[in-house]
Length: 151
Image (cartoon, rainbow, N blue to C red; front, side):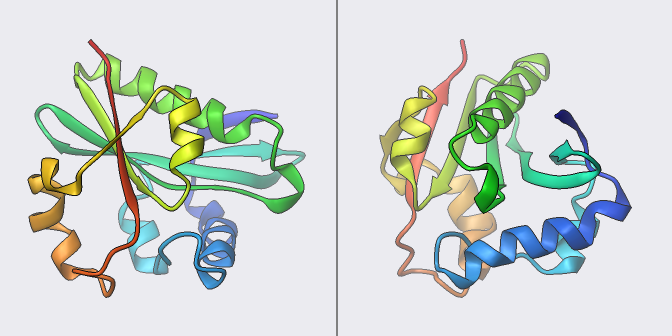
């Protein structure tokens, strides 16, 4: 399996994978437009030419980044692909000299196994007031905020 940056030709597979979980209420849906606009942030795991996992690292501020849109195809769950992508994003964040990385998730236990800890969303005002206010779930978001300190 190969971990690489996403390409434009991956967008349909990424869209299908993310929105599969969104229809199950396990993550937020993503529009194709959002995926095309954020293509440079997305990374995928490819197996025999097929996208089987996806995620992204989004820089929020000078000291903060977010792991977003992390999804693993159902047939590939429990093979360590999600954890591998998270580790990839944490290394990328270190390379960018970002001291903290967070995620908003319905699966906090997964992130806690990756070294994150649960925090109150109020500790992320940059995220809440820049993006969350535009989410259809706001202000009744049921996602849990998790964060890891890298320094």
